[in-house]
Length: 263
Image (cartoon, rainbow, N blue to C red; front, side, top):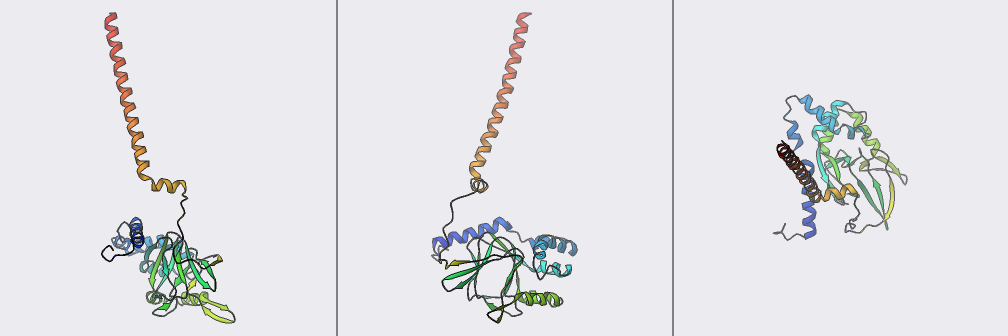
C-alpha cells in the first residue's frame, strides 16, 4: 500500500478490515476444519447447526427439506464487513447472492433529494436472485455495523435448487412487487419485518464516528490498563500473604524464646 501510495485513511480502513477478519476467523478456514470429520453426516450436521437459525428465518428456506439446507450450508462462504463498508454500489455487476446472518445492513435507494432506506433483518437475501449469470445493482447496499454474510454464486445456488422447484417458485413470488401499475422484480427478499425511512442524500464521506462508548466497549479497548490493574492486585495479594506468613513465623519465634527464658 505504501509503494502504491494509497491514501492513509484507506490504508487504515484496509488494516481494520483484515484485523477484523483475523479476529473472527483466526486465519483458519472453518470448512477445512470440518473436512477433518470422517463422517460426512457429522460434518453437514455441524454446518446445519451453525447456519440453521439463519436459514430458518429466510422465507424461501423456512420449509425447505433438510437435505437442501445441508447442501446449501456446505456451499456458502462467510464474508465479514465493517461499519460503513459498501457491499454493493449502484450499477455494480454482481454474480453472487447473500444471506444476512447477523449485523446491520441497509439498502439505500436514491429518490430525487432523499434516500429511501430499507433495513434488512436476519434471514434476508439480496444480490443476483435471478437465474442469470450476472445482474446490475440498482441501489447501494451498506453495512451499518459489523456484518456477517453468507455468500454463494448465483449459478451454484440455481444448480443446487433445481431439484427443489418449490424454493425457486417462492423466490420468484417473493421478488415480484407491483409499483405504479408495473410489475418489478426486486433484488432482495426480506427475512422478517423491516423498517423503511427517508433521509436526505448522504454525503460520500462516512459520518464521523461517535466518541461515546459503553462500559464494556471501554474495557475492551483498554485491555492493557485492565491487565496491569489485575497484575497489581495479584502482586499485592502475594505480598500480603508473604507478610502474614513472615509475621506468624516471627510471633512463634518470640513465643518460643519467651518460654525458654521463663523456664
